[in-house]
Amino acid sequence: MGFALDLIEDAFGSIAPSTAPKKRPLNIRPTKNALFHFDMVRPFVYSQEEPPAASFLRYDLVASNGNEKIAAPVVKTVSPEWLVSVCEQHTLLHDSPIPGSELASSIVESLKKDDAESMLFNLLGFDGIELIQEILSARASIQAFTTRQLTRAAAVASATTPPRSPSNKAKKASSVSISSELDQYVSKHQRKEARRNQRRQGDAAAHDEQNWLEAAGYDMDVVQALRESNIDRKANTSTSLLKEQFGNMEYDTSMIMSGLPAGAVKTVEKGYEKVFIPAKVQKALAQDELVPISRMDPFTYSVFEGITHFNRLQSKLFEAAYTSNQNLLVCAPTGAGKTNVAMMTILREVKAQRNPTNGRVDAGTMKIIYVAPMKALAQEVVTRFSKRLRSLHIKVAELTGDMQMTKAQIDETHVIVTTPEKWDVITRKTHEQALLTQVKLLIIDEVHLLADERGPVIETIVARTLRRVESTQTMIRIVGLSATLPNYKDVAEFLRVSFPPHEPSGGGLFYFDASYRPVPLEQTFVGITDKGRTKQMAAMNLLAYEYAIDNITRGHQVMIFVHSRKETALTIRAVLDLAAKHGTIDMFAPADAP
Image (cartoon, rainbow, N blue to C red; front, side, top):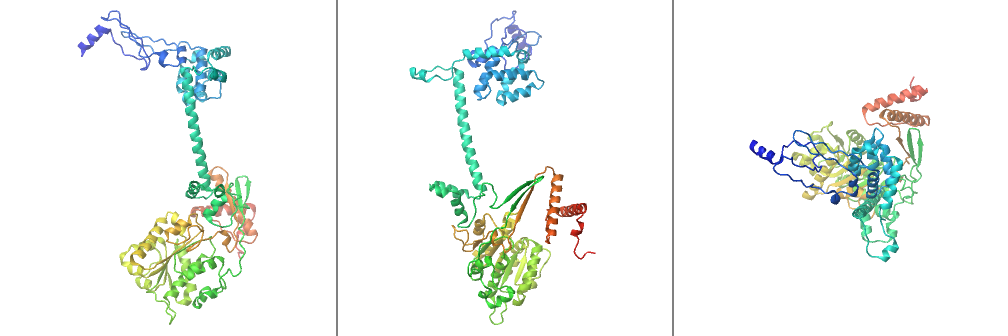
């Protein structure tokens, strides 16, 4: 190895480690005492590859031999013409609205500041990183430029630069145009940017349109089908699309753009915004629209004691619930009367299994499963149904994690009220097959929980029921009760409910809006605009206190719902503190309090 190094040093002289940047071209010459003496050719030719602006840069590149270090490249001088030229090129390449001369003046002023790097980045952007490096390497000479020098350089540049596009007269006179290589590159770059911006604008417009349609409740498959079928312009209006989705229901499209229903009032207060939505006007009752109780069998009269007619919702469901055996999905607001619809389906099964001699039903031949979402609701259903069905000798019992039943108790029970998780466990067990063979009716309350974290459990018990119907060829009726659903048709298909595809309701699917509430409901939505968790909690507590005082003064009761037990204690303590502060603590005391 040492012999080889000696030969190389004899031929080319002593070799010292280089500290120059790797990409800088160096004019290295061999020493005079070398055996060979020749000039090394530069590997990079500026006149061919570099832009014209590079000619203004003068580098002093020195190579050394022996133990001397190679000096790093140093920019000695940079002329004002160079600065104006590179600024003009930058504005042309990136479609900058700032003229090149003004950009050059701004660069000179920026270099005089302490934060010159950040100011240059703000002026030239990410695309000008290389130019920023060149400017900083010549900072000492550039910041000494005067306004007069830059103005003269800009005038010289404008006088020597050929016009970008020939005039119409020149175009007619000659079919040959002369353009520099830089002009061609700039023109090509601008065309590419224009095409890219056009594509972005088209994609953004299509994306915004799709977001608006989805937010308005339209089905994008329906919209696409309408476009592909080339239906006339009238079919593409908002009203037609709404009819496609919701049928011939009455609705008001005047507030679609604002997102608020008709008649809504929005007020902005300090710290919060409030939107008041009036109660929906109930439709006028048609003649003989309400179904009388007398249309049911006489043995059911005691179940509906004190009732002479069903309400509007129950009347519309009477035929489907009591006189047919098809699966049902009922979507209606809370308090609209869905519980009585479930009672109609129970009484239909009682009628089918009832002994005509003594009027009793053998619990060994009929089991009705009522799936409630919570244990507390299951207890309430058991209490209510037991009282109403006592006259028919129908036994109702709770089967949950807290309330277990023996096999003998299950055999004696007609209606079993359970939770989704408990019924899932029972249907998994093979030794419970005898119980499953007796099931005639499955009622699922709050079926909209399919979209909740407990949705897979409900989906599982429905799938097992449908599988059992297919494998044993025995009828198990499925009835789903739910609040309003945006995709109620999808849920109906899942429950195997038959319905006409182009109608909002019909068959076994029934969808009712807020106008079917027996008592009209006004709604007020309040949004806190204060920042910070502490301020938001204080604002919510103050609003809760004000609404409580307002309703108590008018003789109404008040319920305040929070998200956890901890917030329950914190909220009531905050409300009582506010009441004590305002001298209204007595209004929260019971009427019979000493």
